[in-house]
Image (tube, rainbow, N blue to C red; front, side, top):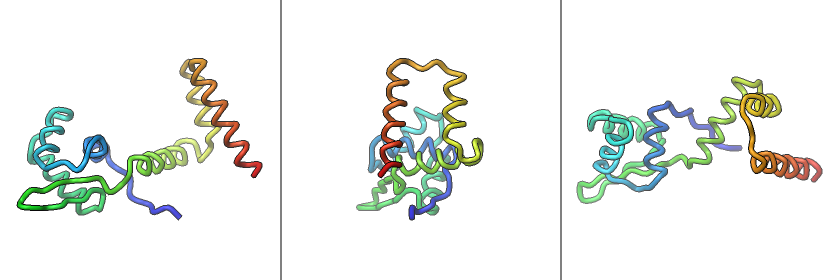
Length: 129
């Protein structure tokens, strides 16, 4: 059974993206990155780092007075949980309803269509085994 972690807020996603991009990062590096990407001030970023550490979403290591931060939730796991939550909330768990909605309102390239066929073939083979 997969461990269930609470969903990330939009602000938490932004900070996690910073850490998923490269980690560990010092507090100063995170503050500078969030200033550039989100226009957050130092206080906001440090508050987010503290809260996310308390929630078990990121780790904080301190050595020689220098704090470094790393994500504790892999990006793939966060994406899976977010997708599962959205799928169940918006489409009652129906993948076909989701794909139908996406493909009806957006043109797909030939490569995207081929990729979808490949995904379906692999799913079909899994179901046969």
